Length: 633
Image (cartoon, rainbow, N blue to C red):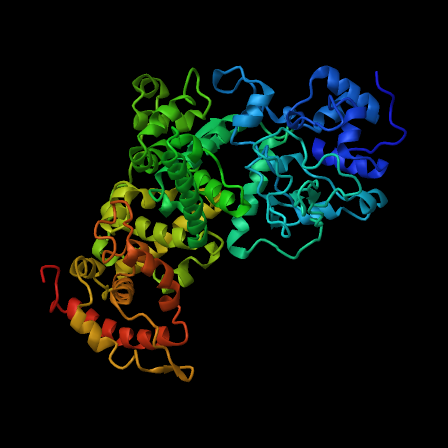
């Protein structure tokens, strides 16, 4: 048995084994490799096996605990092993296999074994003397892809060193070191240990040394606030003392099966991208996922061009290292888990159809009693063709659909997105609900009052894709507690009664029909922009401003939105069939990126164009509403 060290340290909450080694080595003025050798963690002074971060063999755990004056439970808590019962990628028997720790370290994508994320504010430590001298703790949870934010400091985690630009604590493909440069001494625990150099041939590489513990004022942006709520929810599921049940796809699930759900769904979203782009509530999040998918596909192409076999689905099953991109992907997956099995099946169908290889990959999570949740198993079974699971799943019966009400207005009088005046007058108390989903859901409820039936059918009559209609109703209902649901229903009833009494209703159905195949013609476009390309903006002529077909399509979509009161992402000028997958192409991308500029009347040529389009809209509305233009022209 080793001799106890003369001094030791108490572990910090959720501190990782690599981080504890760094802090204790700094206190004892030793290298991490030397400390690992004398505490029994490493067979030699120069090699600290990376597998130690996952679990410690019992004999090594006892030796290490004795040497560092820790209890056996404290030593075990420095590894990730205790999380295995709630986080399946750490389980050596996951999906029925008998895995070894080293194999998990090498092949498991859902553990960050080659680098770590980090929070600079956490590494800076608190006001205690011990943390002032040796820094705060490297959290073991930062090694899990599902942990992307620090809820204490309300910020997304970082993953690279701002000096050397490499992932922090980066472990090269060759080698199995727990930490980079483990024999280096004198480095602060929060200093970057990534090797740089050597500067001369024959020299040993030196550590970057850049301090990672400089607190930065980088709070989560308002549009990302929901990511903090998602992060807290996932952290609660990891905690051993929180309830061991959660709903996923409208059925009870364990935390372990819920994390498997997220894994399956993020892989399907990535592999089938952009089939699930509509699930992104923020265009920035969609762009982040696009960047991740493009990088993955470049890697697949590079492997294939080298002549080696490539299993694409295994690469798509690797979450982004960048925290915000990973959070965006998880948030999209979590939205599917909020749906019922029927709606989830509709969301999954185009994804599974786009990636045939996903069927075989997904089956491994449905073996036996299943590793994913019962709700997702019900939704997936029909999509991947496992008939015995379809029979056994016993999906919940479809709910009784509401009949039409005795109202004098029809679905043609309902816009596809609630009017601003309606929102302000009737739905101001629900401003905390996701805005675009609330606006969509209100219109769908009004449509159901007119024609009855399922939300998806009502939404389709308004030009809203079936999956988008189901999703809006599901999420809005989820964000309302029982008391607020009653208040929301009363607001719908009050608005419906107002429409019922009105004697002058706009015929949005006529407008939708008239504009179904309409576009601003080339001649109309020349008249609309006459003089604008040569008009000075801020004292100078913007000769480089684009006035071609992309801008004409953007203007056409804006006119369509003003007249139909629909959402630009469903506008028929770029999406002739709203229920078909969203099309790509340069014009669709141009509209997507420039829409905020025209919609917000950005000062300059966008504001000038808006003024002319507003006059154009008034004239076109009169022509459609009076029958001068109809859907047959």
